[in-house]
Image (cartoon, rainbow, N blue to C red; front, side):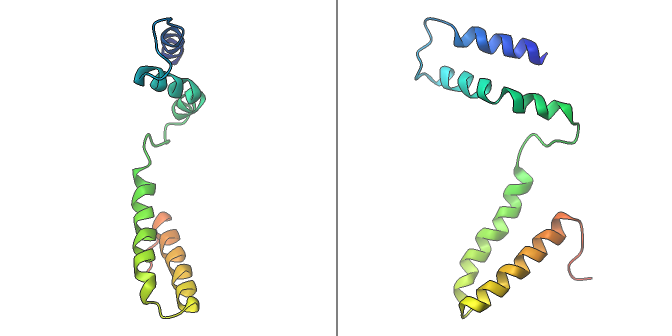
Amino acid sequence: MLQDLLEKLEEISSRKDLLPKSTLAQAVGYALNEYNAICDIFKRGDTALDNNYIERIQRYISLSRRNSMFFGSHEGASRAAILYSIAISCRLNGINLFE
């Protein structure tokens, strides 16, 4: 199935009437550039197809940036960054930080 996809992408990209700046040409070019990564997804069954989990983790970093204005000093912000790092590491590894 992936080989069929590759062949179809190459067929589309070699069309003479396809403008290089068109949305389709850009999408096909992107898919061809990422073809090895697409294949890697199917080599392991536990690979996520999106990055929503990491996006949710990044949210904590964004919140810490806004809250860092109130840490009082650079040392306080540095200590808070260490605590955020520990808290996120615990969350990633399924450890309850408060136990």
